[in-house]
Length: 115
Image 1: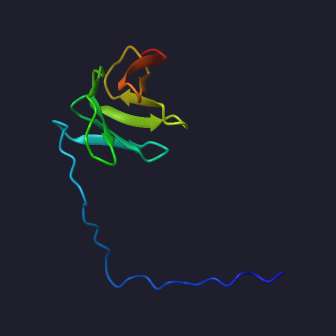
Image 2: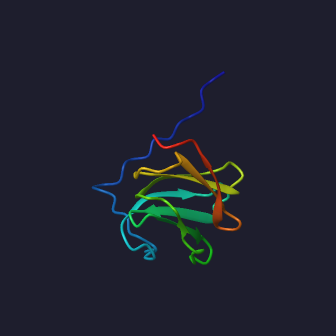
C-alpha cells in the first residue's frame, strides 16, 4: 500500500498576529482559567475575584456568578456531558473540588477535604 501524498504548506512569512474578537469584562480582577463546555454552548471563566462566570457563547451574556471559593479560582473542567463544572481554588478550602450544576448555575456538591 502506497502512502498518501502529503502536502506541506509553507509557513507564513514573519510572525502571526492574533486579534481579539470579543473582550469579556464582568470579572472584577484578572481571569486565571477558562474552559469551554463540550458542546461549545458555554465558556466558564475563573478569576482572582474568587468567582466563576458562565458565558452563553451565542449571546455572550453571563449567568449570576458562582461564588464560594476562598481564593483565586485556578482550575475549571466540564463533565463530559456538560451538565456539571468542577472548580478548584488556590486558597485553603474545606473542599478539594467544588462541583456546580451548569443548568441552574448553583453549587451542587464538593469532593475531598482541604489539603
